[in-house]
Amino acid sequence: MINSKKAESDYPISNIIANRWSPVSFSAQAVEQEKINSLIEAARWAPSAFNEQPWQYIVGIKGDETHQKLVDTLAEGNDWAKDAPVLMCSVAKSFFDHKHKPNRHYMHDTGMATMNLVLQATELDLITHQMAGFDLEMIKKTFNLDEGFEPASMIAIGYAGDPKSDDMKTRDEAPRQRKNHSDLIWK
Amino acid sequence: MINSKKAESDYPISNIIANRWSPVSFSAQAVEQEKINSLIEAARWAPSAFNEQPWQYIVGIKGDETHQKLVDTLAEGNDWAKDAPVLMCSVAKSFFDHKHKPNRHYMHDTGMATMNLVLQATELDLITHQMAGFDLEMIKKTFNLDEGFEPASMIAIGYAGDPKSDDMKTRDEAPRQRKNHSDLIWK
Image 1 (spheres, each protein chain N blue to C red):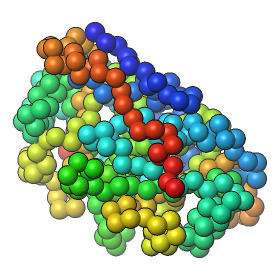
Image 2 (image 1 turned 180 degrees about the horizontal axis):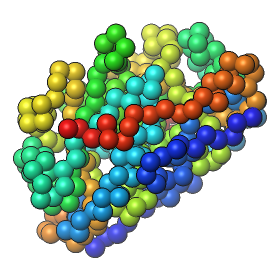
Image 3 (image 1 turned 180 degrees about the vertical axis):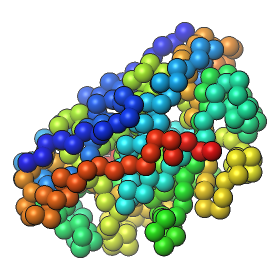
Image 4 (image 1 turned 90 degrees about the vertical axis):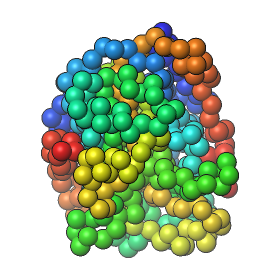
């Protein structure tokens, strides 16, 4: 079992930022409800444009109906995620309540909330893995998302476990890759 | 000087998440280059769809040309930000390099990177305040953003200072407000 793959950073960064990574091998061990509460609480305190807080989370716990419905939307390549004891899908509201004006920042701010959530998970010794590969239309239909509400990211959450295949082992052992630090500065 | 306004959270959360807030009163004290390096490094290690890492930062240091150019784009209500010793503007790339396909997650993932950046700032005893109020078109023109590159968020960064007006004092002393925890769960 690979418990961590700390970022090989060029400059010092916070441990929870360096230790967050996206493995695919989850243990069957359930996640405590108080930890789930803390994950949502961390998302709650993210900043947002005009404090609109355009994020919500569909929360599925393995064994419940919501978890199965979320599993049903996963793309084939994300089959491993069915074993994660918690699946969440973030839902982003694309307009401001005030005057119903479009909120240009809705995805950006939902991303910030979810970053808080996954870092809080890291602090609680949980692993997380976000996915883009799921059926957006099925989410909207299954969970009755009104117009203007968009699924953003599917998040697998749980404890680290043993890889169930060679492919999963290879994925979890692959080195973490990032652009160069200097490439992040706009010139 | 108000040094912190820790989140009054309903469930336990990480200190750097609770201590991050968005004051308007900045000290004139410069930010050390090694701290700026760590902020960008923290952004670097955020996750992204297909590891595309669609974020970059325009970095202005008070006294340099870039800082002044960023100040010139600020909306009137964000006049206080001209005193922040560091101004950054995140730039989000809206397409995948691979086949030039649109990247639905570009703003979301840039938000995640920026959340890492502002949390890293909190860890380094810096304050940050993100703004939506700035002239997008002026940013694009001034910094030669190619088509498909979008300014996301303006970020004021520095050390906490004394409020320069009653209005700034009032803003920094106002209680932090968030939706209820239960309202973040999609039902």
